[in-house]
Length: 160
Image (cartoon, rainbow, N blue to C red):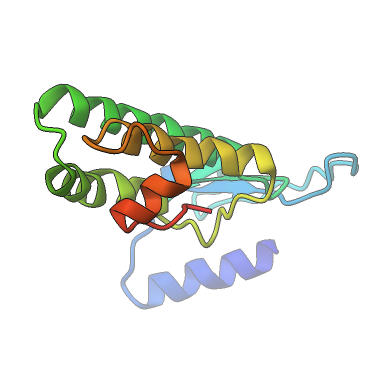
């Protein structure tokens, strides 16, 4: 692997590309019970590239065991904050305005790269679905309905 890194660094140098070596991070994918093999990889300045349990790349938290609990928890937290902000900032609870705000400001947070961190456990799915459940309950004319009736009435799909 170190030889591959050297080749990549050489290619980058030959093509007038600079690397910010202070941002180099390493993530070893492994089974939680597997023995850790402590190879050190080095950047062009011969500094050791630090190994992490999880890293954040393009806004997605990736763990060394290929699980996405941290990503889901962070996304749920951001989406809850955004829902609170919407409900605290806008007085209206009319369906058209609320759905426009939800689709424009909250749904992108919820759906960002969801194909990658796809929730697989019932707990993760319920945690994410609770965001939409809470928001749709606040819309005028829907709080007497159950969640699935609200989705049908508002022409929304389940996040599942």
